Length: 127
Image 1 (cartoon, helix red, strand yellow):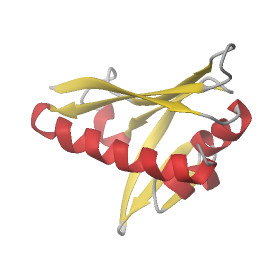
Image 2 (cartoon, rainbow, N blue to C red):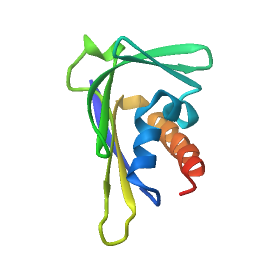
Image 3 (tube, rainbow, N blue to C red):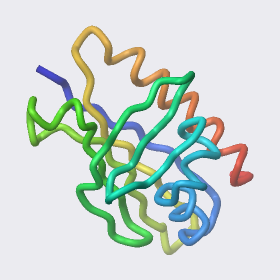
Image 4 (tube, rainbow, N blue to C red):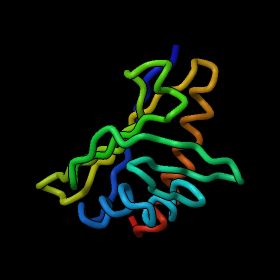
């Protein structure tokens, strides 16, 4: 059974810029995967010659995008990964909240992977 975890990251950027980096194939290819393609409503993420397929579960512009790995569909409809964010009206900073699931023994490596990807995203948007 997979365990849910969340990571939070404060970013100084605009919602429009961040949304483009989180939802478009081009934006995701810049920080999340080596290449991303969208075909027939499915997202294909490529890392080191390995392709992983994900289904788009939901997207609300400037708020969140939620995917489910194709390999998890038969396992449970409750597992997904989500990139959600909200703008703090006082500071104009954005809180990015990543929600994902990992096997108990793989949670630490999954968190490390997300932290590395977040470093790339911060450099990309200058936050």
